[in-house]
Image 1 (tube, rainbow, N blue to C red):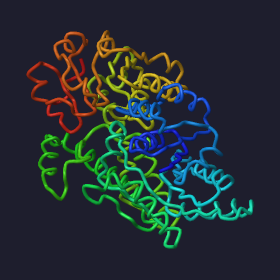
Image 2: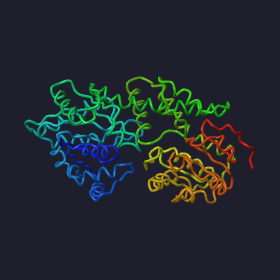
Image 3: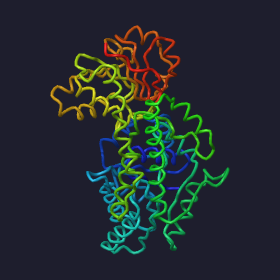
Amino acid sequence: MKVTVIGTGYVGLVTGACLSDLGNHVVCCDTDEGKIGLLNAGSIPIAEPGLPELVDRNRHDRRLEFTSDSAYAIAHGDILIIAVGTPADEGGAADLKDVLAATRTIGQAMTGFKVVVEKSTVPVGTGDQLALLLSEEIGKRGIVGANFSVVSNPEFLKEGSAVQDFMRPDRIVIGLSNDANGMRAQKMMRQLYAPFNRNHERTYFMNLRSAEFTKYAANAMLATRISFMNELANLADKIGVDIEMVRQGIGSDSRIGFGFLYAGAGYGGSCLPKDVQALTRTAKENGQLLRILSSVENINDDQKHVLAEKIRRRFGDNLKGFRFAFWGLAFKPNTDDMRAAPSRALISDLVLAGANVAAYDPAALNQARDAIERDLSHIPGGGSSVDFVNSPGLALEGADALIIMTDWKAFKSPDFAQIKNTLKYPVIFDGRNLYEPSDMEIMGIEYYGIGRSTARFPASD
């Protein structure tokens, strides 16, 4: 099939590459000519396992193209997938300006019948808004035969495993209008996703608004589970409970399951924070208070500062003269995404308390440098308080203690003897609960996790 993907960000690039790998002829279009130039030169602007090989293979086989020529891209595709960003605005609502701009461009250029797919995460009712906008633009041109159907097809990709998630989906959600064009679009979308349904049916067809709502509901549930466990973990620290044992105990219940039950330093990234905000804002606009989600957001904001409190309890409120090794900056492993990363909040807390930081991440150093320098720009001399280093060992040199904020595989079985001998104090603050407290005790390392700190804080040295 002929497919056009508008937007070459995280979702658009993964979607375009994966659909081309299934044999479709895909054109990815973006207004950022610099990004298109990089893609055509073989560079991938994001870190995602398996994506570079996928893009390279399908470009070589001429199934995948990149262009900034929107007229060409729109003429090419029978299915036009909008996959541009919808960041939260200052009020927490989803910013739809790029979605609306892409839709307007489609209406100004399309001929014949097109299926216009919302892949971007958008508020409920956006599909109806896009349909009106398309009708207006087509009407201005007076083009005979130009027709369309707006479809909602939300993405459920996890950064770090997006290619696998797309190629082996547990479900495909498609929202359609209840008219003749909707029926025509259903046939085309069924054909597009047929390779995923050969073993068993994974596609769930529903109305347009229900599909839009499904995306927000899924992310809201995941965020709720994370904040729920983080709140229990903070209580566990106070009453001598190991939250990891609790996780295993409740996760084994088939009604609950193990997914997204890990206590830690809070969630971040491009999806959960903004989607919780957007859904809460939508409810408020409709006269309803989502009390659980409001609490989820507040808990997560507070959770990003829990590790800083543990550090102050161990070393004192004034951290001037202290240097901390920092392993992990991206909000999760296998990505370079720094959006709403908990590491940013913790580094700001430490610098405000007078500390210096030596930070390392396997993939996110460049993105982290830009983001953290912006975060610290209001603190006099704040930018000079953070050194970005190229290895975990360099981060340890001259450091008083080690902080872990991203659960990269390389951090899961480190040389603990080296850590202990290099640090001024044999102390690890673990925001991802990578290690067993009992093992750390045997090795003579003070260990403070989230909900696992069975050791008592000693008196200040």
